[in-house]
Amino acid sequence: MLNVFWNSGPYIVTMIFIVGMFWRYKFDRYGWTSRSSQIYESRLLRIGSPLFHIGLLMALGGHVMGLMIPASFTESLGISEHLYHLVAVALGTIAGVMVVFGMTILIYRRRTVLRVFQVTTKMDKLMYLVLGSLVLLGVYNTIGINLLDLPGKYPDGYNYRETVSVWFRSIATFNPKAELMKDAPLTFQLHALVAMALIAIIPITRLVHIFSAPVGYLSRPYLVYRKRTTKKARRGWEPTQVG
Ligand code: HEM
Image 1 (tube, protein in one colour):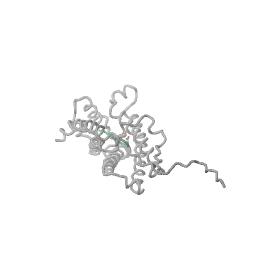
Image 2 (cartoon, rainbow, N blue to C red; image 1 turned 30 degrees about the horizontal axis):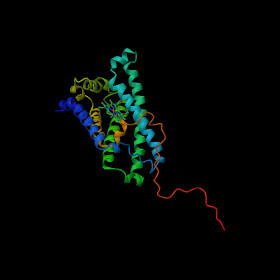
Image 3 (tube, helix red, strand yellow; image 1 turned 60 degrees about the horizontal axis):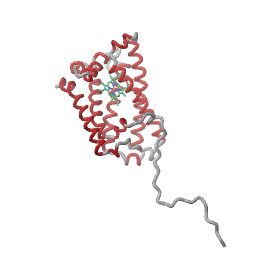
Image 4 (tube, helix red, strand yellow; image 1 turned 90 degrees about the horizontal axis):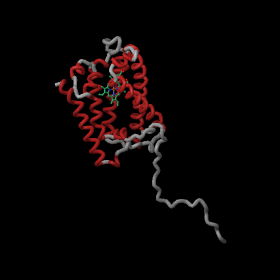
């Protein structure tokens, strides 16, 4: 049963994602936005948002390296497994801490600033639940297992490049190898499972903005929304009083 899941789950999720994105684009083109809440509160957002987004981009950059590039390739460049592991844990820890801090600020803001809470939808809550679990599992894998060895089973860290990464590439090359995933620690399996859940719900959440964020999205100034005023524009001068 588990084998069937690790072999076919990623393809089912990819289909759900593709069909969902077409559906969203067709029926909700004007709702294709991050639905920024900056107009309601900007002090906490200014700290939480860049911390979360920059940390996440760093983490995802690490995923490209760790999941897509085979260990044999980095070794052929003279980068030993030990050195790779040190760099991955160091950068992964920094990225993970940034994401957790940023996300905590964003969730705190959403819950405590009344106006932001009022515009929070059910889908936002679902998204935070799935994204939050995904991030916590990822951070546990990096810091809890690979840095601190909390389970006491992996003194040199768990070498996911021999299992999870090979499974990931086997999916991409349409030659799925489920057995590799079954041997990984449970939290690594759960992290991949929740990642698939996140990918499946992207089309029905505000996360669609990831796919329309232009380059420079992170560095551009925030959008400022202004109320359309019904008052007549002031002339800026008063008529001369006669008599
Ligand atoms: C099937 C897809 C995925 C797989 C197989 C996967 C695998 C992994 C692995 C092996 C680690 C540990 C890295 C290390 O210790 O060096 C990790 C960490 C992490 N993952 Fe994922 N991941 C996936 C998707 C995602 C997604 C979609 C996100 C976020 C949107 C994410 C967020 C994180 C974070 C924040 C960490 C901790 C920081 C870091 O080490 O970079 N992962 N993931």
